[in-house]
Image (cartoon, one colour):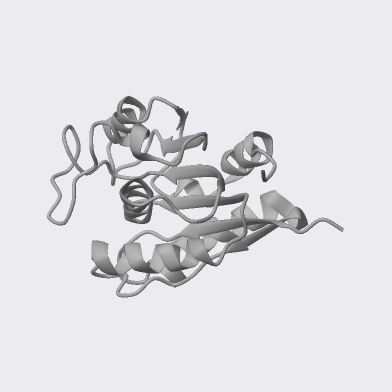
Length: 189
């Protein structure tokens, strides 16, 4: 029997996000991926006031507990902190795929950052050979679509998915994300 592929879902920020918002996205992802995947959804500290040092440390601990070949998915600010943490210090685990959902780009061409800014050569700093997928709803009123375009510029290996009619939460439907994960992940080396 083959072990289920692990998927780490990193929540977005804001009071009540874990229990009131992103949990519906995680439920959708679990349904769509099925039993061949083990979707993990840790609660991050101080979700109403996320700090890079605290969240990146928690994310690194979660990644360290994964098996090689896992997928990491970050929503909104959680995605931004996830990608910065991966660029700043490569994980000990080999990842199969990095997915960002409605992640703000913090840095040139995006939002200003107090604690960090994503580098213009972000793609070169990420783990080599790991596919990056960026999903953004065209009805997202929280993070402008231009942020997804900034990721596409800064991460040449990224593939961008613009989803018509979808909001910041992708209308709690991660069907496209699940399809891409199932199709694009490489088997563990």
